[in-house]
Image (cartoon, rainbow, N blue to C red; front, side):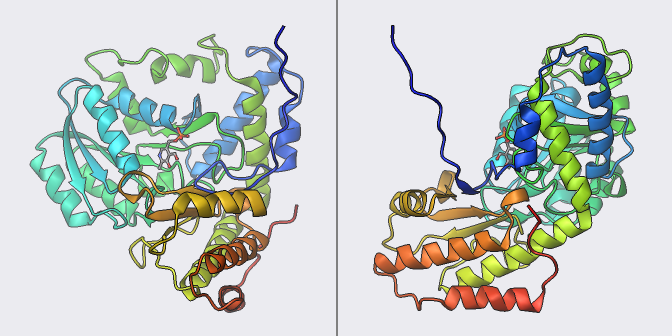
Length: 402
Ligand code: PLP
């Protein structure tokens, strides 16, 4: 009989686009005994998770729950529940994930109207307004809040929702890389469907896709002429399991829900505002350090994400070699570029548990050392001084207690 070695994954410092590091309390929650998906203990946990998610999404939406699947499953749930054959869908595209929304909308039979912006730039409001107008009777406007492939931070979501509603469309907001890192104000901005993931700002492993539907979105779902194309993601089925009836729909991933519960407990203990401030302070220091090293940030100035910084790879430097050295010598992962940014940018994430001052200093020091050894002229220590200065200038609480 073939035998297999014991599982021994390395404990990495995760500074890529997600997953981010997971708090030991969350890992501990995952080894709790598995109960049935209709057990009264699990039923109580489901109610608590829904309440926690409403706090984090800043919403009172009744239909708020974690989709059993990663962020892409939540994305597909948002799109599949609203879109019917022939519907007009306006979609912002300035990176990989806007492109994924387009692909889903096309597969669902929508007539897609893209509003494009150059990679790294955000989508301008007047272009969104013009596209909504050109679409005549748009059903959906979908946009990515934090474009993980470029580091661009889409502003004015409340304004965008107003533009959508003025034309009778629903706003779907992709908050996969924003929830738990920067403000996401579902009710205040009047977002109709907002979805996220567990493995970035929330600080759990990948596996669930938190989602929330406004009353207006649910009315549109209930007014569909045809059934949702996806059986698994049809919210009118799932609501009977996550709602008070607790009717079996699928076997919920029990241990992942334990993880989400504990991760959300940690988010709520820290407080959303202090958490956002921590992400911002650590990002300012990282970005100041990278610039001091002579590197160029790729996202549009004034619209850079705190939780994900895309940085141009200096000419003549081998992308994979640097990432491999970071992994081998510093036990640290950063992200490669996607699509047209492949081989051209690195993506450094400081999300959730990973957004810590010590990680900022470590990655700057490691990059100085590796790039210096590859012939890039870098004054050693300059990036760390710039980061220190940024901390001194804006400095709330940048490290979380362990
Ligand atoms: N949307 C955005 C903005 C993302 O960054 C990602 C993944 O990184 C997704 C959607 C898809 O999420 P997942 O990889 O969890 O399926």
